[in-house]
Image (tube, rainbow, N blue to C red; front, side):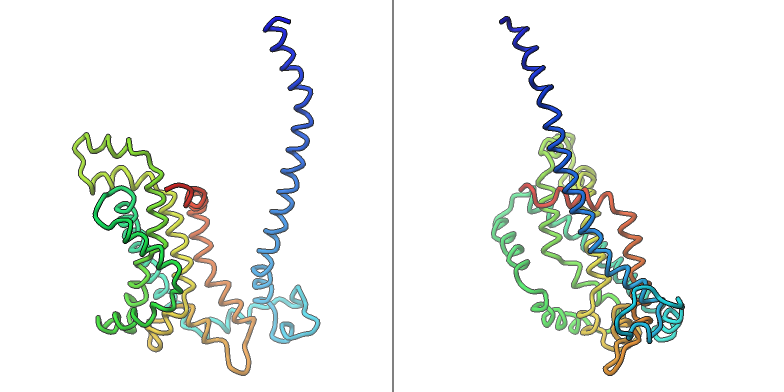
Length: 295
């Protein structure tokens, strides 16, 4: 057989095998999609239960067996929540603390990550190893030292005290170091040949190229800052500078809890995070997909 005939024969054999290959691939993808749909439904169940409970009465919540749908939907839980918690004052504290914490952590983590990934200085590997060791230590062990620092600065019962400790993050530094490590060196070298300094290369060239990771870090930091309860209870146990998490925790009584009001408050407090995630979801998934794969 000539070479042309051999090539035609290979193409025909591949064509005969392709339907089976496509069928097996389609079957595998179908099973994966079913598994993902089931997992997504299981993750959505608590959120749906929260919404339904917010429109129930206290008697319905305590009934046995429990009911799924409210028999007579009511908004009394929302009214109880707004009358029990200074919502707007605590919302302002949570929002200001979140903005300070997210903007500060993104900036500090980006600078530190760029230094570990691109700059060469004595002790770089040792210092980065210490950052990784901090990830293995429970964050609760740092609470006492952070409290002493805030007390020494005279910042107790203030909004900056809620945000300042969260600006410095070993996890954020690690993420940004991994992101900068994936950027080809040619971009940095080209900017340096044009006369750009270190800070200009960082700000004009490198930072825009890791924008998805910045968005991912911003979403993760927002989630942790908005839901943080332990640190606000320690640094701001009384007064007006308490976030919404403390307000929700105060609704849980020792002998009884109004669960419709509690679920209504939790639903309202969840909405800002949902909005942040919807706005940054594309960048978030792109950043998570590229994190920790190289470097």
